[in-house]
Image 1: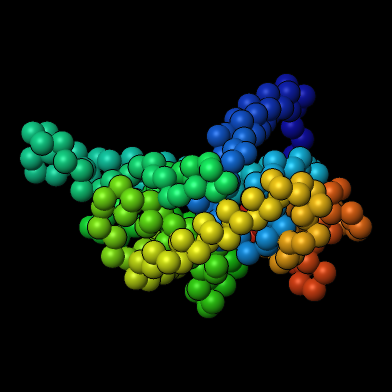
Image 2 (image 1 turned 180 degrees about the vertical axis):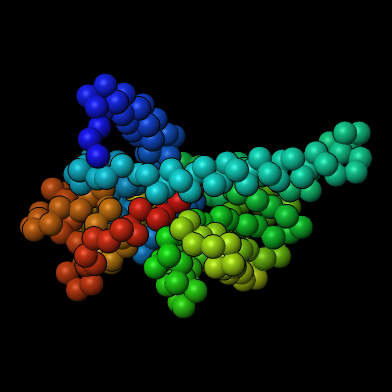
Length: 265
């Protein structure tokens, strides 16, 4: 089937609007580390991020999958906000059962407050939505959420605790991006304050080291595979970490269609 030149021109117009919108989203422009990143296992990646080192891996595909996830978050927020307003007596007292997208400060890294929007707080449980593709979802069902997502959940728990709210458990709810609803998967654990504090302490130490030594600190930091192909500082073959990271030489993964599954935070 041939597309007419006029329709092709209109497609170009629409594509430009969509791509500009996604690339200008607040998450795409975020420069300060957020709670969702504290659990990334690669110390060097934290070193680059906290020192403000310029990204080198700039030829990245459009964050289309992350944008889908963002819009699922928006839909869930609208759904639960409507559920709040439907509660008996809500119009009189305005008390929400579902606390949605509340901003919490979880601690500091090198003197800077680390804050983020938590998806949901409900009856002492801190919830985070993730919208993975099929193969990634199967991996989470088999192996659990992994260090980054677990730390993120406990860190948001700390943020709520610091606001004076009781926190008993944390949960990561994996909702399928391209499968049926029945394939959803819930992970939860008792809230662990120390796990959040340890993550903050680790990143704070890295930030202080890079602030003191600059790029000379990079060779001192451990490299560990963490979605390397989508890392802003990946530079395959680099022999100078100031120019970029060659990746974890032992377990660097090949690119796959699932690498954009991380949602924000």
